[in-house]
Image (cartoon, rainbow, N blue to C red; front, top):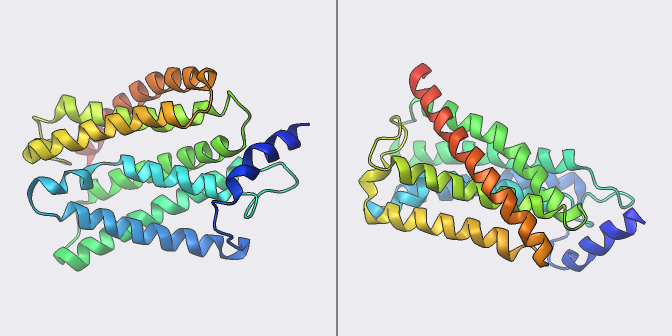
Length: 242
């Protein structure tokens, strides 16, 4: 009965997934991560206020979520109706680590220099923690039954809202030397407001029933609070010891 439930939830989505042989999944994940990381860095290098979105970590977590969702596609990773979340977590981790490499490789090519070690260590920590966590969340969204799968949507939405709230509260400061978000003025306001809106939309639009939406919104409140405190503590820790 459980395997039927899993199949019934994943089969309607299967037609939207590109068929990827399992032996090539790792290479495809790393390649996509490298390209995405490079694109994020190029956004960071845009002139003036347009570069504000390049300082956000939300797009990275979205990438990990999508990677986990794709990793448990019936055309890639589903085994006898019992998909494994560790595969989704691994896909999320690989994607964010590859994005990290692509980001700083693009920085070397564009600027000819690297970043402070503390900044690199900060984002590496985010990748190591957020990659598996949100990769598994993407896998859970694909495979868990309703309404429990709505927890995954709430987690992703909460992470986006939590990051934006943290930046909004600290935007007049230098954010421990990592980001001078206040320097982006109106660009920062637009980027952060958009991140809050997208986070809320994820929790409302992804779930298919009102019951799922309630679960997702409750999770969003909890996850956004945890994300805001966690990010502030991480920034403070790396500024102190980095």
